[in-house]
Length: 163
Figure (cartoon, rainbow, N blue to C red):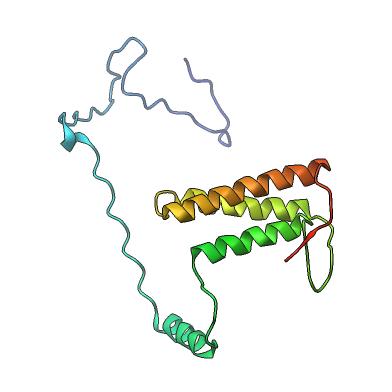
């Protein structure tokens, strides 16, 4: 395809393919040697990045935070994180009554965002969870998605549940 004269502000396209459509080597095209066949031909995977070392400031902040925290009588683990997010989604769907404020109207946008965050957690932790954690996350996502569809279509009715 012949090149047409272009203004200096136009984008210039350069064909860098090594072979013509007829399969012939283009003049001036650089030929790269073929890698040897076999497992050594695969490109080496990059080494996993070493965990970043905690700075002195970060360590001081963490230690100060830990020192200010009273002893807790609850677990802080993956299950409690997932349950907290799912409870937030139920509040946002208007299906759970807030003991302090009573029933709140549904906020479908916030609920969808929370459900999507749980889906990201599921995707990013796939293969790293215990079977119990996988089942919990899968079941909660199923129930929340059904509840979202029910609320958004007006098919869910009845008094909100108290927590």
